Amino acid sequence: MLDNNKAILIGVCLNKIEFSKKENCLKELARLTDTAGLEVVGQFIQNRQRPDAAFYAGKGFLEKVINETGSEFPGVLIFDNELSASQNRNIEKEFELEAIDRTEVILNIFHEHARSREAQLQVRLAELQYQLPRLKKLWSHLDREKGRAAGMSGAARGMGEKQIEVDRRIIRHEISQVKKELVKVDRQKEIQRNQRDKIKKVCLIGYTNAGKSTLFNRLTDAGVLVEDKLFATLETTTRKLKLSKGRDLILSDTVGFISDLPHHLIASFRATLQDVRDADLLLHIIDISDDNFENYIEEVNKVLVQIDAEKIPQFMVLNKLDKVDPIILKERVNSRKKPILVSAKSGENIAGLLDLIDDKLHNAKKYKLLIPHTEQKTVNNLHKLADIENVDYLENGVSIIAVINREDLSHFVKYVVSSENI
Figure 1 (tube, rainbow, N blue to C red):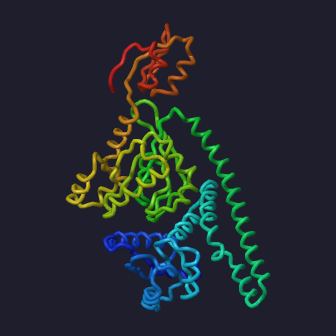
Figure 2: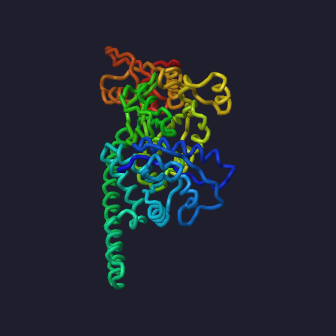
C-alpha cells in the first residue's frame, strides 16, 4: 500500500468520558493496520471539544506526536476518524506525510481479501463511492495541472475544473456499471435461493474475529480459511448441515462486522448481507474471552438494524469458553439472557448447540407410513422433505419410517399408520 510501511495512529476524543472507548477503538485500528501490512510505531489520542477544521486533530498535537516517533521515520498518519478531503490535503502538505483514515484502511484490507467476482465488485463499488468526493486528493494529474496553471490565466483554471468534472463522470459511470454487474450477481443468487427455498436457513453473524469461520468448519468440515486477522472472510460460504430431526438446513458463514463500519460499505455488500436477511435463525457468535464483548454485541446489533435484520430470531453463542477464567466466565454468562456456551476450537458443547438449533427450527416426529405403489410421486416427495430411516416394499404398498416436520406433514397425513416422539 505504501513505500514506507510505518504508521502513527491518531484518535480524537470529543468526550472525555468516552476516552477508554476511544482507546479500544485505537487498539482495533492497530489490528486493522497490522492486517493491512503496516507497522504501528505510535498511538496517540487528543481530547478536544470539536474537531479541528483544518487538521481534524490540533496542528501542535500532530507536530508533537510526529516528533516523538521521528526516529522511526513514519510514512503515514492513520486517523481513527474519517477525514474530509480538505483536512487530508492540509495534513499531507503541512507534515509531508501521507494521511489516510480508518475507512481507507478497511477498503485496502477488503481489496486484498476479495476473492470471488461478487466480493471484488462489492469492494470496487465501495472504493469508488469513497473516492468520488475526494478526487482532488486521489487524482494526481490534477495537482500537476494546478502546478502548471500557477501564474497563468483564468482559462487554465477553468480547464482544471472541467477536468475534475470529467473525472467525476468517469467514476459515476463506473459506479453505474458495477451496480449493474452486482444486480446480475444478485439475480443468480436469487435463483439459487428459490431452488432451496423450502430448506431452513441459519446464518453465522458476529464481530470480526469472533470465531465464526472456526465454528463453521467445526459444523460442516468446510475447510474455510481461518486467520487471526480482521476480515479474513469476505465472501459468504454456504453448506448443507445434517441434523437429527426432519430436513437438513443451509448454514452460511458471513463477513464479520466491525464498529463504525462505513454505511456505503454496508450498502456495497448488500448482496452478501442478503443471506443474513433471508435467514430463519441467526447465530450471533461472540468472543467471550474479549473484554470488549459487550460493545461488540452492540455494534453487531446496530448493523442488523441497518440491514433490516434485527427481527430475525437470534441465538447468542458465547464462543472461546476455553480461553476464559471460570470465575470471569460465570460473571459474563450471568450478564446475558439464555446464552449458549461453546468452544469452536475444541468442539465443546457443539452437539448441544446443534440440538438447540434443531429444536428451534424443526418440530418433528417419527412416523410410519404406508404409501400405495401407485403413489410413487408421494414417495419421491417424502424422500426430499423427510429423513428416511427405513423402507419396506410390501404387497399392498411401500412401508416407510421417516422423521417428518410438522409443517410438511400435511402432504403425507393420509398415509400415516402410527407416530412417536423423537
